[in-house]
Amino acid sequence: MFNLILFGPPGSGKGTQSEKLIAKYGFKHLSTGDLLRSEISNQTKLGMEAKSFMDKGQLVPDAVVIGMVDAAISANKGVNGFLFDGFPRTKAQAIALDNLLDSHATAINVVLALDVPEEELIARMINRAKTSGRTDDADESVQKKRISVYKNETLAVAEHYSAFDKVVTLNGLGEIDTIFTSICAEIDARA
Image (cartoon, rainbow, N blue to C red; front, side, top):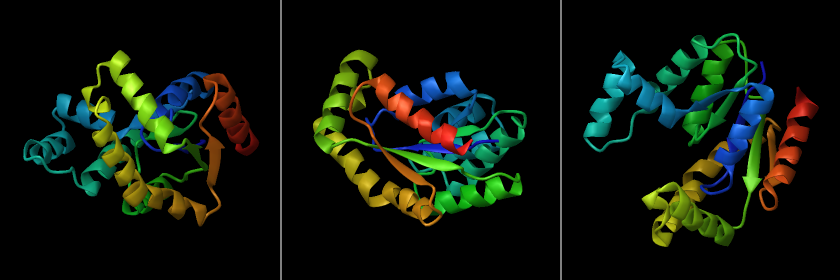
């Protein structure tokens, strides 16, 4: 089983590359946003617990999110591996994920970090707002705040995995297929 985290700030191309990686390698895509929506829709115990926090405008606690990730891993034992997207977002979540994967006798193989300059990230998100209907992408001040949160909180995830020599930084600028080729080369070198 090959597990990877596709990492980068908002607008770096994670979603675009995730779709291509899933098609090529047959990874199971694990997005915590998708998991939350599914668990709530199916009215599972974890879903209802998460909904109670969300209804109060609070973040869903890490323990609940990790429980959902655990359920997804348990339900997909035969997959080629997992592609984590948007998770983990903090060092505490990374440590919890490592412990969870260890309990399933697997681990993160590589963290592929897409590097894109801030000006390009903002331009991409504003452009994405025009085509995707994501109104949160249209406001440049919102984008700067999201990038700031990424720098102040989420970069700690890369630092955590760097200690285990699992982070590869890739240029996120250029043609989608060129970036995809460089991502695949890193996966193929480790698979």
